[in-house]
Structure formats: structure tokens, C-alpha cells
Length: 161
Length: 315
Image (cartoon, rainbow over the protein chains, first blue to last red):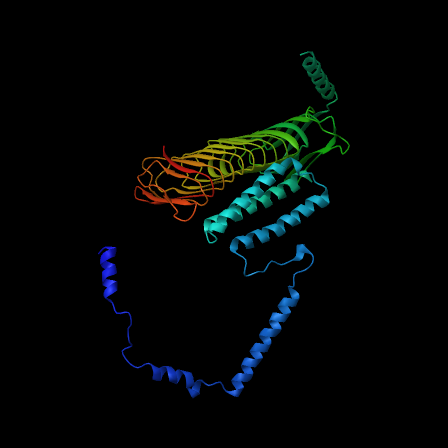
């Protein structure tokens, strides 16, 4: 059967289909079934659960409120794409390593070309991920590249210290 | 020309002057067969050979700028450390220490230095090497070899076992390795002619040139560098190639059995010269992709590129 034949058969099908029996009684029973009505005891239980949820959320918000210090900021943002989340986590690690390098007075300028090149490639990958945000292979490449960047910084710290 | 002659004369004179002050060293000690041995040489070069006599033998001349050395050996652990003078400023012309070292062939070795060139062969246990700018020439090592350098070149021939060579700006050359092979460079190039069963090659801006004879598990990735890889075992290869901006040419034998899946996300071209299928370009984007089955499709070959070109070629 080709696509045209399939389309012709689909055209012949009715646009509406009625249920074989009247379903409203069942629906009505579900809506007003006294056995399923919430009792006062259940209401209290639900209120307790709701209160606990509010308390938990408040505590969470208090404990993990973003700090002014970027080093201890915890990256939790469910609206970020996978790529943005990877890059955000990587940036934290990278900044920490760059601070270590700066604090130790290490000269990594001879490898600035390599570092810049990797940054540039990271941007290329992010552009590609903007086209295909769910592409797992690209996400893996981004993670790999970030690992390489971290590894390079660690190597430079290890050998130039 | 006159200036060059004068400069050459100055260099030779400096070297002679330095060598004239070099302290000779000669150490010999009986140790265990699988002694843990740590050697630290800040600057210089060493020939390190394996022996069957369970002896540590170190002879040569000490770096004129060194502050002596420490040698200790007890409870199966031996350390030889040349002490670097904190006030010493090293230049390219400094000869450093020049050593010939003989160690039990089953020693567990840790060798490190800054500008320390190493020529090592014949060991069969575990060897760790760290240098900043020194070059490594390793031959016929067995067991585990892990070498790491910043700007040194790493060369390995006829090494067997778990091999891992990593450098930032140096080049890597591997010939006739077998076992598990991992080669990683940042801006250096990687060249390998290997019989390893698993191969992992990574470069950032360096190029990869690989002739892979037996491996079925192969991973290669580059950022800006190019890949040229010959995979000679086509029975059921599991090959993963990823590149951001570099091009990749993969050569496969006529009897290859694998499913091929290739995608270039942001503009790279995919060229298939080994079967009839052609890459399909996205209708509403810059990407293109190719899927094809070679032979019975037993293995899996995955190409992923952002901007680089991917080409499948006949071996």
C-alpha cells in the first residue's frame, strides 16, 4: 500500500466516533462518589503534608540561596538546557582553577593559545547545540572538551607549580 | 658568519666549562626484584636500562648547578633525588646531569624531572614518567606505562600493556604498541602504528595519523586538528570519531562489517567513497547525515562533527 492509498482509506473513516455505551453515569459516579469524598481527618492530613512541603521549600531556599561568592554558588536551575548546565558547572570548576593559578602566581601564558582555542571550540559546540539542544553526541563532545580544559589547567598547575 | 662562529665558540666553551665542574657519580646497591624506585632529576638526561641482577647502578656526572643528591634504599623502596639549587637559573645550554642507570627489570618506577630527557627500555612492571620539557624515548616496555609531559615529545616503540602517553604541546609517536593504548595531546601531533586491542586518541589542535591493525574498540577525537585513520580490522569495528572543526578521513578495508552513522551538525561535509549511500542535507538547517551498512553490519562506526568534513575511504 502506498501513501496515496493510505490517505484515501483515512479519508473514508468517520471524523467522529461515539462510545458504544453511555459513559456519563460512570463519570458522574467518579465525580461525586461519597466513598471518595475527603473526610475531615484526611483534610487535616493533607494540610499537614502541605505545611511540611512549604517548610521544606522555605528551608531549601534559605540554605541554597545563591551566595554573593561565586565559588560557593550552587548551580540549580531547572530552566537551563543541558548544554547550559554543563557549561555552568564547568565554569565553576574553571574559575576555581584559575583562582588557584592566580593565587600561586603561576605563569600559564605560554599555553594561552591552547586555552583560547579550546574556549573557541566550546563556543562552536554551543552554537551547534543551539541548533540541536538534545543531541547527545554533541553534549558528550561538550563534556569531553570541558574535561580536556580542566585537565589542561590541572596539568599546568601540576607542572608549573 | 663571524657572529655565528663567535656564538658557537661561546656555547662550546660554556659547555666545556660546566662539564669541567661536573661531579662524577657512581652508585651500586642490591635491591629487591620488584623494588619501588623513584628517581628525580631536575635537569639532564638519562639512559635507563633493565637488568636481571637486582641491582641499582647509577653512574655519570651530576648537574654542576645541583646541590648534591640523596640516595636511600630500604624496605623495598629506593629513591635517588638530585637536589636542585634554588638559586640556580637554568638555560637551554645547561647540560644538567648525564646519567646511565641500570635497574631491575621488574622494578616499579617513578621517574620525574623538569628538563629531563629519558631513554628507557626493557622494563616489565609499572612505569610512571613525568617531565615538564624533557623528551621520552621508550622501547620495549611491558606492563603499565604512564607518561605525562607539558612540552616534551613522547616516543614509544614495541611497548606492550596498558600504555598512556599525554603531552600538552609535544608530539607523540607510537610504533608497534600492543595492549590498551591511550594517546592524548593538546597542540602536539599524534602518530601511531599500533597493534593494540583498544585505542583511544585525543588531540585538540594537533593532528592524528593512525594506522590501527587489530583494534576493534577505537575512539578518536579532535577539536581543530585533523584525523587520518586506517582501521585494518574490519570484522566488527566499534569506532567513534568526534571532531569540532577538524576533518576526519577514515580508511576501511573492503570486508568491513559495520553500520555507519555520520552526522555533521553545523556545516561539515560528509563524503562516502565506500558504498552507494550519500549524505542527506537537512532541509531547514546546515547539517547533514549519512547512514549506511557495510557488509553484514556487525560493528558500529559513529562519526560526529560540528564544522569538520568527514570522509569514508577504501583502504
